Length: 288
Image (cartoon, rainbow, N blue to C red):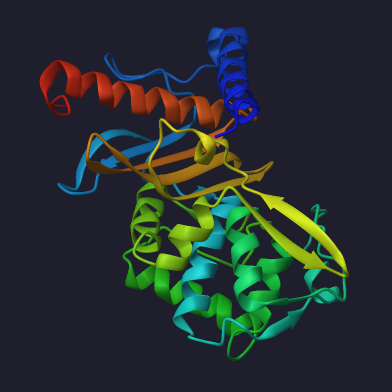
């Protein structure tokens, strides 16, 4: 990673720590003795290999999940096995998504299904996600129905989707359900690659545009991230889900409803360092 990128990641983590210290005690989330001082309201940490829960807080509460939705959108779009090279146009239907959202994909932009999937996962492009779902066999309604059916298939019984981007607060799931989604997504090569890519260039209307990952952690060499997704709307707070290799073991981390822009990153860092310290002290994760 370039030196400037390393500095940006370090500054973000430090800034998140300062925000936490500035909060009044009443605004801070209570924690169990010995656990890291994680500030997200819903937290789940699982050792995938043993299915052991290493940390949990409000993990069974269904809440809005924002753009974490796009992991499920990607799964059902890929399972439809449509051509990745088919060109899809961004239309007015992809701009009328119920609330304002930034996008550089203007109406009339034509991109391949594969490129739309790439920026939907990496840069959380809402118009890309909506266009993908519109072009699902049977259209948008069939795509959302497939997302809900897949959730049921995965045992995500606290989950419900109404659209493919996450801009609706009616897209809800529990942290426990999202851990299942992360594990399922991690088994799909395209989702692993696109969600952890740092940047991607696209030619849009004769201009070369560079898109970047919404997750600072993919730039951090201390992390070996297999799959990840960020999310934010006001009702959901800042969210982050990921699967990473820590001391040779697959660990799933779900962080929902974080109050600050950088706090979810700092929470993930605190969890990783907590697990690494356990291995250094006990040779494995500490018994709970």
